[in-house]
Image: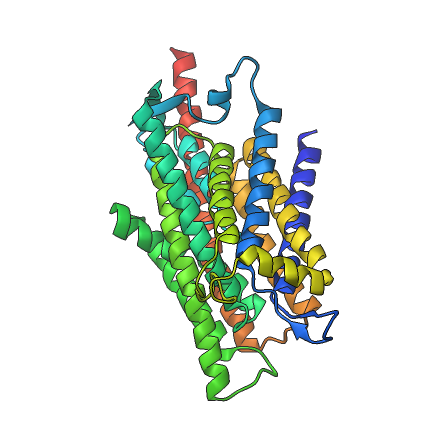
Length: 411
């Protein structure tokens, strides 16, 4: 039964997020206008984010309702009943270290996987927390942190989507795989956290890999000053996206270190706030804002989005695929995390990113040079070093815990 569950989880993560990646890339290329016959790009990132966050919040709520313990109140289910006052070390390992480790392998869609990894690894490190009832200030502070994460995500997503107009999807996937770099930087700058020595080696490897990948580029691409400037601009947009993602991840680290919330609860609240924020931006008139509201000045984006859908009906299928598969994929992520732990999840998400890049190359016929493949290999090698060290450390801690249990039995 356990093996069958693992197979279902692996197939679920792979299938959902591979379809999600294909839909995301499809949304970045032009759609045919049925009135004029001209190809035009879908630019409403706000509608894209609203559909994604609404589906994710609904799936997280459904997951929590299914997993709700008998007798648990609504506040307990939503993570509003108990807060943690302070950490208590056991076997010499603090929980905060587990959080910072887990976030380095966050998922490419942004917000749920790495945070859940950190939460699970913190528990694996053997730490416990004293708990006390939630106060009004606790709820306000927690909701503010969730809103802060939602705002970060709302701002970051348009930059990532806009970068696809200037760089290829394999480049974006590879850049997203380098999430460790901005996460570490933001943790150091915002919360003064420190990291193990091997993490700096991983940062150097992924930085060198992405630099090599960008330097060699794709076969058959247009060369010249204009093409180079476009690629640099796309990379700049992706760096902004990753930097804001790093701020999001470090803030979620802070939430996990101070409050007793689960990954599903965080997924629900952040996506709920994200849906609220992006819905407001959709219905209110906005000035022209590059990447966020690239449409007509002071026109409501919901109107522009609806007009685009009516004249470009082929956008509906990839838009629905993007929202639904992203939400369902996160459910498989949490199911894997609950039953098999973060190490199995890291392995699945790491190989999934590699297959996403390969699938993009095959379906959309990107032709990479040998140098680009070398750069990609260096990046994934660096991420593999991080996964290997994490696996080794957690295994050593489990051995120590088993020895402690054996000593207690002997007594």
